[in-house]
Length: 159
Image (cartoon, rainbow, N blue to C red; front, side, top):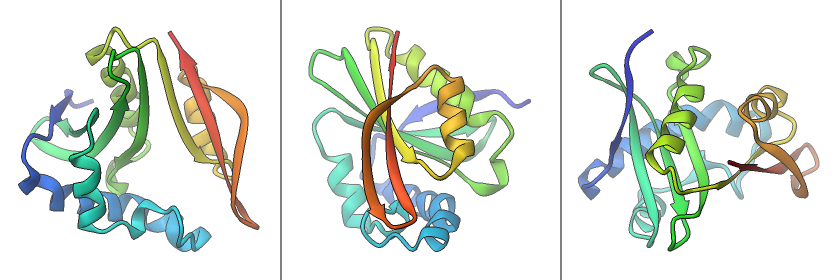
């Protein structure tokens, strides 16, 4: 398996690359659920720029050797004790190869003071729910109905 590392996105000139990865990673889910409201597939470059410029928001490219295979965005509180993943995106040709799991462990190791992590995912995508559960995330009672056939489930992991 290739060496994996995270590279912080420092320059707004990299944001079109983030948008392209995000569209490729979320295209299948968008067309499955036709989610016009919350799908990352529907984001514009301006949406990515706004998040990039938010205080305590960071994007990291996921690199396997010399290849960018995705990105992860995290948001922290000011004292760096809580973090939120929103989103993690792996290009389709690199899915199911262990990169997502390794990325989640890598982001945790970059921020050892963060003791509580949160994220959400589509409840109906059981492989995603199982993925986060296996990483130690616990499903919360909180859910959000997006449409008749799609709900967001919220998760937390305490270290």
